[in-house]
Image (cartoon, rainbow, N blue to C red; front, side, top):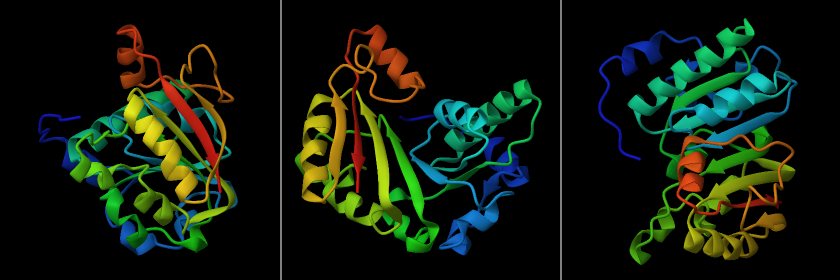
Length: 219
């Protein structure tokens, strides 16, 4: 999603207690960045405006979350959404961190010592042109990278509106040695998650009559 430049985003991020501007420095030791390093550790790749991670994190105070995106404007909005969700609960955001980084180079900021329990990928760019498909966050090339820091039995939760991306991703997961333990071509009539947090894109596509595809894969 393209978004207009927001001049306030960078200063607000730099002033935020839960924004990390130097993620490379925490490679292999992310759990130490949180108040309780013994909690499970989960990621959202491509967090966008943060509607999903803000609700997920505030409802799961016994889990630590790292949300990654590449655009300051998006992360600025994510910061504000997180602050608003936590303010409603009258608590400080101590179990969530947001950071700016290129997910294609994710092995520069995460490794096996981080022992990630789960990855969330929601409505990522489908990159429909053949020459661009390797950029997909669920492409085999990327999945092999995630295996470097997912713990044994770690999971990936994936949602998309795009039929081709979903069907191709089923192949990517198989090629990478993941087991797809649950899948659906109509999430809202066959909810495979413990609780489905509806994202902005999800609501938009659903209102257009587009069925949401989803899966859970395990390594």
